[in-house]
Length: 327
Ligand code: DP6
Image (cartoon, rainbow, N blue to C red; front, side):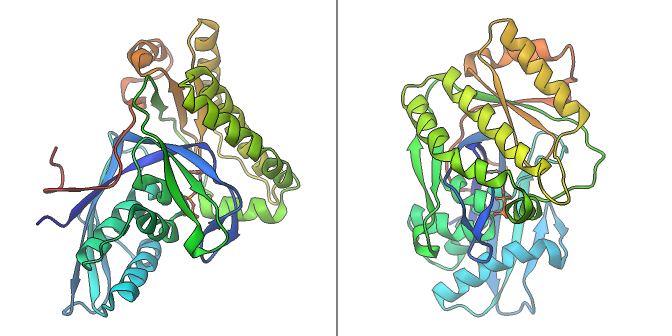
């Protein structure tokens, strides 16, 4: 039997931004995402008594201790659950259409949770896998599922996990605008922690979330692409506003991010239902009808190059594959 597990990345439409518990990765708020077909990670784990320490290979390159940190958290939990003491060799391949910094900890840590528990002989439910992935990286808790998923914040390790919301088997897609960035990165982990601790706008963010979340769930239920986009865009703008109030302040926006946002507004003026969201980096992700992805992409080619524009459709949840790269 294969020990390769594939997980697709997800993009939050209602963002996870801030932790109530940094060790357990318990979030301050519920979040809701769409899992996508275009980006995924494939991982295999082998527990081996002959190894003296855990090893992580990403795209065939051995990674340093810093990269191993999140991975080790998940491996340790699996070892504890399965009563294993041996070290592990983790092989991982990121499938991203361009080398544009889109590799995601969401797909990576979700695939690891699946592969490590498989290698350890644990038969975990989706809920258990979601909790395990969460301990590596919060957003990974949602990549266990295809379509839309909601990470319910909970109050403890046992009560904080994602659940499926809708299989997204309708006319919704995402288009990534990959833009350049010369700034020094503030990781999402560091950025959200600084924001929670220092931004006076953070409370405003929290106060508005229940409304955004319930409106989003209704829009998804009604398959209303326009409302999904409106709510996602306003939620993302609020999240990004909190970073400007942090001390020291920071932003993930680059001049090209703003150019992309302007392009989206221009497309709306042309009558398209298209909105954007952004995460802890300068890339801009468009939410639109799947059936209009190519038309919208053609318009955007006036301002951006072929390789900057990546179309994505709803993708599947965690699953075993026969070998890396197989269909
Ligand atoms: C802006 O899941 O990368 O993408 O839990 O610290 O590993 P850690 O953070 P991570 O944060 C993702 C933040 C976000 C919003 C989101 O995906 O919900």
